[in-house]
Amino acid sequence: MIETSQEHEIFSYEPFTQHAFYKEVNRNLVERAVGSLPTNRPLTIVDLGSGTGAVTQMVAEALSRRGMNATLIGVEPSADAIARAERRLAGSSMDVRFVQGDSADLARLGVSVDALFFCNAIHLVPDKNEAIQQIAQVLAPGGLFVFNSSFFTGAYVPGTEGFYRTWTRRAIGWLRREHPEVKLARDEKALAMQWLSGDEYTAILQKHGFGVLHCSLDEALMDLQSWHDIGHYWLFIEGALPGAPLATGAEALRYGANETFQEQSLVYVPRNWLQVVSRLEGNPRQN
Figure 1 (cartoon, rainbow, N blue to C red):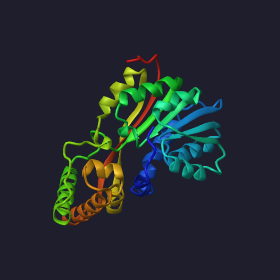
Figure 2: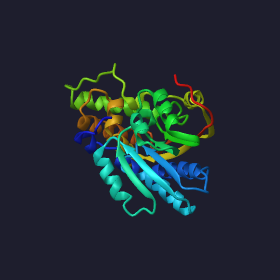
Figure 3: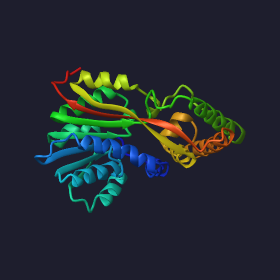
Figure 4: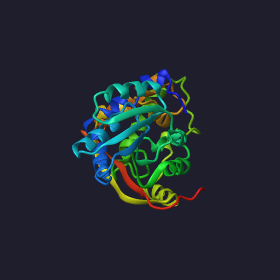
């Protein structure tokens, strides 16, 4: 379990989560998953990597609209994010609690889980096979594992590849002119850049006893401000410009986005989110 540093709080993911498209993508997944849950009994639902509670709140609201009852457990490594999530969910009609941890700590919850959400974070896990095995071990038979990501092989909508190439070139060019002392470490690869395809995720799920109920690509239209916000996120900076100080890297990416939008006369750039709902069907293998 890794505690988030103060610098990472400054260069946080939170501003990106405030965009309407981001909320819509996650709400679509939550609604689809909650619609597949049993309605005749109280449920136990985990939100892994719950952050400041945005998805936890969506799950609580979706359950409430259907007259369903559940205990919601947010699992999150950052104590600061947990404090913000607790404030966000303070008025919820559901029984909501948050614990500090990650996928390795799921077994310590000591509960049988009916559904586990892991939204916008599975790409950060170094060993996805191990994490999905840990998730399978805490789910009840027939339990749902629900996740999404915009950092996967297939995230780039066909025809948009030129945007990413130009953005990176413009950002690196700015760095070389304005901060020649910064040396990028091209041999490094950030967790957020370690991508799998939808088929690769499906193969891991099947290995651990999951059947895929739903797998789709949801397209989001990202405007310039949203690229500013994702370019101010520490993990994205480390992936795009490894070795650059965060503040300098964020400034370079902002410049690059501005230049690319202007050069290519862009209003937005579409990007895909991988959306997956799976059900634990059998006994997962232990390897």
